Amino acid sequence: MTHDSDSTDRARDVTLDASNLKGLAHPLRVRLLGALREAGPATASQLADRLGESSGATSYHLRQLQRFGFVTEEAERGSGRERWWRAAHESTYIDEGELLRNPRTAALGSEFFRSVVDAYAARMFNWIEKLPSFTGEWLHAGTMSDWALRLTPAQLGELEAELEAVIRRYPRFDPEEPQTEGAAYVAVQLQLLPRVEA
Image (cartoon, rainbow, N blue to C red):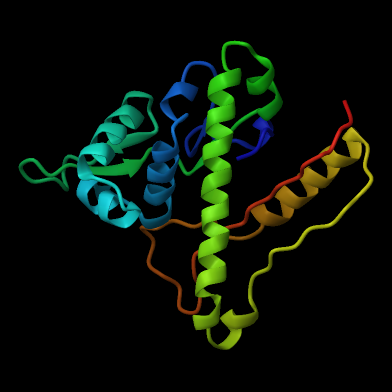
């Protein structure tokens, strides 16, 4: 997620706004979309097993995601009542400040951000839990770091642009491409959080 609309690719990315935010402002929907992006197409039952939810709940929320254009059905994979779903986009873009300042989207925007933060935290807890089982080079790969900087808004914007440019130099993950030997899915969670005194 980012607010840099200049870097979006309309064919691969979706931008959240007042017209579609409601479709993603639910914790399970954020998790479902993330699961489809990370592991590729799946059925409601498969996603229910993966996320520890009921298939009724995942089925309902997948239909809501479809209604707002976040997922699409793969009719050629399904048989009978089994429906396969895929993420419609690779990435989600958002102008955080704009959504939270707009009275029409502030409440839904807050709910969406809480769901994203929960998903980020779950990913970090999962990494910590599995770290003791890593071997070889993976044992020392990855980091959870933070730095305290003193920046102006312009400097913060420059830092964000530079970090995004570095990240874009590396190949994007596609769950349906053949796996590269020695490579794995790596989540890059970028958080630049200014503390502004009221």
